Image 1: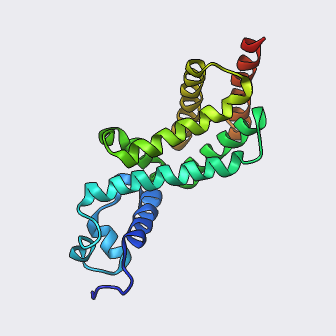
Image 2: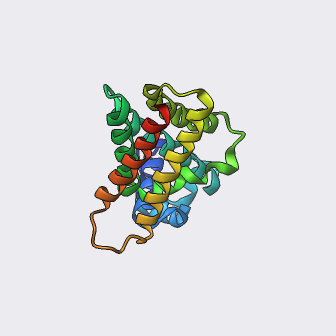
Length: 190
């Protein structure tokens, strides 16, 4: 195979994300990636330092995509409407990009990386902003953001693993759980 014209880091990252979504994050290998791109494996090392480096770039890419999707979904909304829209965007992202979503969770080994820190902080700050409509103290907002992320991640992970076998529509389930979560915020504020 001869090197393909126009091969760059973004092209490699996109192809790696497609493999992750189709087959799972652990299936992203330099051999499979080079095959998908029609190049020899050594050509990839002109653009990425290693397989672990590539997977970390997938982590950053996944966080950027998730942040953008959530931000767009909540734009122009506030209160319960914004929380529902953002939660829906989160679940949709996990459904549409299961491998890339998995990559966002593999970030704990990179906690000293400034870009990872900034993207992770952006996600949390975005959720804190959503909860501003409820006039919460900062510490209380952090607790509730942790709870919301737990609900969303737990739901997305169980759904991905086939853990919801009952013949009841999944979107109805997450909407009910979010309604109870928000009702708790409203009751607590009275």
